[in-house]
Amino acid sequence: MATKQNFPTVDQSHRKAYGPISVPERLLLGPGPSNAHPGVLDALACPPIGHLDPFYVELMGEVQELLRYAWQTNNRLTLPMSGTGSAAMEATIANSVEPGETVLVAIKGYFGHRLADMAGRYQANVQTIEKAWGEAFSLGELEAGLREYRPSILAMVHAETSTGVCQPMDGIGELCEKYNCLLLLDTVTSLGGVPLYLDSWKVDLAYSCSQKGLSCPPGLGPFTMSPRAESKLLKRSSKVPNWYLDVSLLNKYWGSDRVYHHTAPVNMNFGIREALRLLSEEGLENAWNRHRSNAEKLWKGLEQQGLDMHVSEELRLPTLTTVRIPEGVNGKAFALHLLNNHGIEVGGGLGSLAGKVWRIGLMGYNSTPENVDKVLNIFESELPRFRENDACAA
Ligand SMILES: *Cc1c(COP(=O)(O)O)cnc(C)c1O
Image 1 (cartoon, protein in one colour):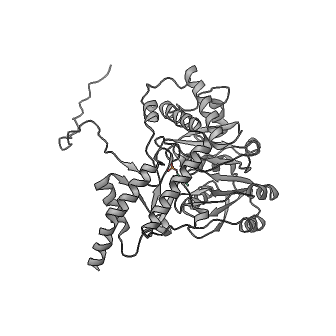
Image 2 (cartoon, protein in one colour; image 1 turned 180 degrees about the vertical axis):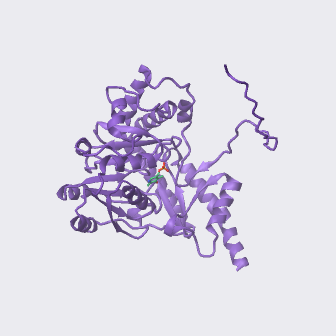
Image 3 (cartoon, protein in one colour; image 1 turned 30 degrees about the horizontal axis):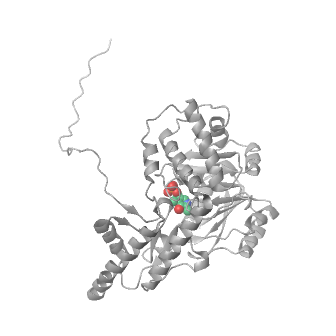
């Protein structure tokens, strides 16, 4: 017989009365998330269905097929991890690294350091080569690293969101083949916005996110693995040391067996399915060209206002531009002003670029000439006041 339990009610009389949620309107032109496409928001609002429902199972296949298209790969093992880009990043490491193996991380910004940190947590022998924030690696520099460290994996970032640099990929896959190592590539800020040819580039492991070039809210981390990486996974001497991200388990759900692993965030998958469908409807090359031409318009306009881009033009990333904060301007105060008074989000610098650059993102749905004009107009009208204020204060 249950005894009546007499717990006192927790006193929450100090708690404010909450109204229903109301989110301010923002134009997200920072390093991510970017604004979601309205069609994607509609898809997210569909009622959830079971994650083993035949309709849902079919949708999973569509998401995989569309992801392969977006990445230009035929990799069988291509699926969205339930988690953000960092979860997919960790999945590439967790599934490919065995304790004691050498992982060479080519670091040229913040996210390269994150890769090195993760590889260390999976007990890799982590070696690094580094470039200044704003530069990319040459083939010679990468080959010197491969020759010296003989890693089983070379890990690097394609689109370094912290610096605005796009790593040229020509010849890197061939180098990895020559030195018999897998190529692991972060494509978080390139997928959907910058040319990506995973198979031609001989990339073995790659990951991305839903909230940057794909115009979907954050929550999913696309992941892909080549047959070469798959056979390494099959030959592992120890279990993947992360249950949630173990692709051999996940593949039993995403593959043909449909064995329960975890409850898929079905609505997020509705959303990414629509985001990827919109990308394929536009066409990859059209999307890449759109990002390129809008970025060029932004660069030209800002330069006409006397501002300097941090990265040399041939390495500049169309999805994320780093603009040097002019001498005497409080960059943080300016960004806060844009957010609070104009609803426009622009990012600040990370790591060694903190306080030195603004980061302006033109990703996915947000990469439009109208948004570029908005940024240029607001910089033209508002920035002079911040120059003057600081001059007066000095
Ligand atoms: C945003 C980003 C990540 C991390 O993705 P989250 O979705 O924030 O977890 C990883 N790498 C790069 C290059 C990024 O820009």
